[in-house]
Image (cartoon, rainbow, N blue to C red; front, side):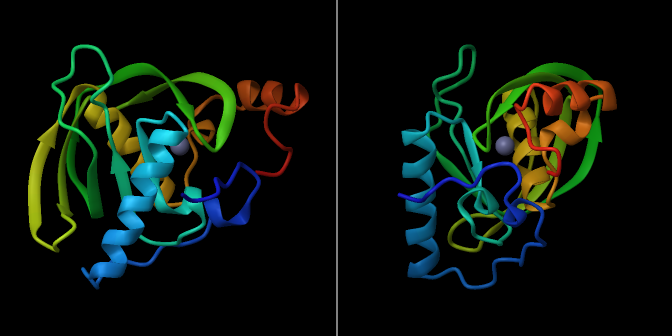
Length: 167
Ligand code: ZN
């Protein structure tokens, strides 16, 4: 299990390195990340959120309503090739406890990524899967979901001390 990193921690803004070694060590990191995500009751977790500056994230939306149960999945070196549509949904983040805000993002994405064995895939996603993937891909690019809300809402969150002034 990993220790969570929270908003204000510089690791959340740091550049991440591509994953190039698909070895035992990587499988261990993925297993630990999935355990941490389940323990924290999250539906997605990106490596920077546990202090690891790598292009790696895990998702498990099997507990969400109206979604087919698939269990936890790891995405390495994810790259959005195309996106379309627009949808507004309320988001939260394990690194920003107790804050939930509406965020508008593309509805569908076409994603290129490697699986844990290094095999390359290109898949299309919509619904919650597309939403969670975009949120987690933001993390590996040093972006937080509160970067997407209006400056007025950001100021309110700072004033009520829900997020630090410098984040
Ligand atoms: Zn997050």
